[in-house]
Image (cartoon, rainbow, N blue to C red; front, top):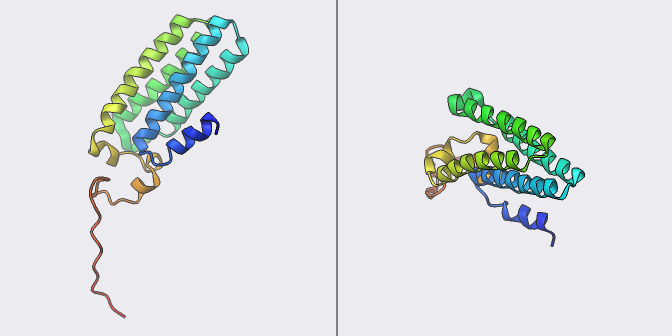
Length: 157
């Protein structure tokens, strides 16, 4: 079994926030790969790694719902745009130090998402498209930790 199949199977039961964390982890992994490519003077590998990082930032930014998320969503949008720009500038300069700066910024925001993942209320305010299938179909008044009561009905035919 190759690594990507394992990673895909590991995410099958993930919550929406866990999927966001996985995206951040992927960005970090590719940023480290870009640093290695800079050290190895491997232009092709650096461009491939940076391309993957940029794709992740664009994906995360595209999923933001500014109409629902308000100021926090706008702040994340600005963050993704800044990380996109900083990553491209670091790659163009072939700068390990600038790539490490991007890593530091991404880690801080990733850590904030990690804290949010421990808050049941945070899971309920995720946009629908960032929720897992199970999370999408839970009524908003029920958290993932509560059991659904069997429905009773008075209707009869």
